[in-house]
Amino acid sequence: ITQGNHDGTAMIISWVTTIEPGSSTVLYGTSEDNLNFSADGKHTQYTFYNYTSGYIHHCTIKKLEFDTKYYYAVGIGQTVRKFWFRTPPKSGPDVPYTFGLIGDLGQSYDSNITLAHYESNSKAQAVLFVGDLCYADNYPYHDNVRWDTWARFVERNVAYQPWIWTAGNHEIDFAPELGETKPFKPYSYRYPTPYKASGSTAPFWYSVKRASAYIIVLASYSSYGKYTPQYKWLEAEFPKVNRSETPWLIVLLHAPWYNSYNYHYMEGESMRVMYEPWFVKYKVDLVFAGHVHAYERTHRISNVAYNIVNGQCTPVHDQSAPVYITIGDGGNQEGLATNMTAPQPGYSAFRESSFGHAILDIKNRTHAYYTWHRNQDGNAVAADSMWFTNRYWQPTDESLDDSQ
Image: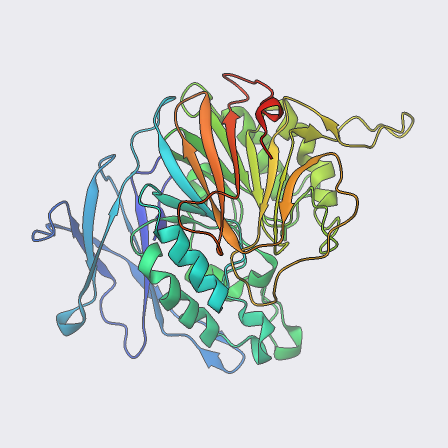
C-alpha cells in the first residue's frame, strides 16, 4: 500500500492475482468484522521480453478519517485476504510521527534481516523508501519473476504500512537488446504513486504531507535540467510548503549528492548543481538517498557559492542547509560498499559500511530524534543517533551536540 492523495486521507491498495483477474474491489471498514465500505479498482497486465505478469490490481480508497485503523480485504470466495493499516493524524506543526527509512533493499539474506529489524520497532508507522527494490535487472533477461518474489517478501510490512516510493536505477529496466525500450516499465505497472495530487505530470516525482512532515520525492533518473517537467514542478512546489502546518521538509532521491565512498562517486553531482540552491533557500531539513550500499551522514553543508570567477567550490557549513543521509544499506544484491575515500572529508560526520535501516522520530515542530540501526546489533541499539532541530522553527547548530 502507499499514500493515495496529498494529505493522507486516501490509500492505494495494490495486489496481483496470478491465474485469473478475479475482483478489483476492496472491502474496508473500521471494524474487522464489518467491512461496510467498498471501492472499485482496475487491473492491468504487462509483458517484458518472455515474461507476462499476473493481473495487477490497483484500487484507491478515499475519504478516510485521519488517525484511524482500517481493516481491508481483497480477493473473492476462498481467496479473500484481510489486512489493516492506520491513517496518519491530520497535519499540524506539533503532530508526532515516526518514519522508517530503507533503501536498496533487494531480496537477499541481509534484506530479510533488515526488514525484520525494522519490523521490531513498534513505533514506526510508514516507510520512506529511497529506491532500488528487487534487482531483477541484475538477472538474465531482467527476470521479472524477481518482481513477484520481492513483493511477496515485503508484503508482511507493506500490506500494513504505506511505503512512499522513490525510483532508483534498478527500476529503469531499459533493455533495448530485449526489445524493451520503455524505462521504468515493471516498476510503473506495479507501484503507483499519488503524483497527480501534487500537480506532477509523472509518477517518479511528487509530494505528500504526512503528519508534521512534507515529503518531496525526486527522480534521479528522469530529466531534471532547466525547463524540464521535473524542474518546473519542483520550482513551483517549494513555495507551496507551509512550515506552520508541516514544519519538517524532507526530500527523498536515489543518487546521493554528497558521497565520500569510491562507489557511484559524483553521480548525483549534476542534480546537486541544479537544485541545491533551492534546498538552502527553502531550508530543507533532511535529504535521504540510497544507491551507495553503505551508510553516511553529513553535517549541515552547502556548496552553492561558485560563480566561475570566485573559485569557491568547496562544501561549507551552512545552518540553512539540510543534513544529507545515505541509507542505501538495506541488503541489495551486490554486497556492501566498503571502499571509502581517505581521509574522511570534513563535511562527512559519520560513515560506516554495514547493512541496516534508520528511524526518524518526529517529536514536534522543533525536534526530531534520528537513529541508524545496524543489522548486526540488537534491535534497540543505535549505531548512530542525532537530535535534529527544525530549520524553520529552531535552526540551532546540532553538530555541537554530535556525539559521533
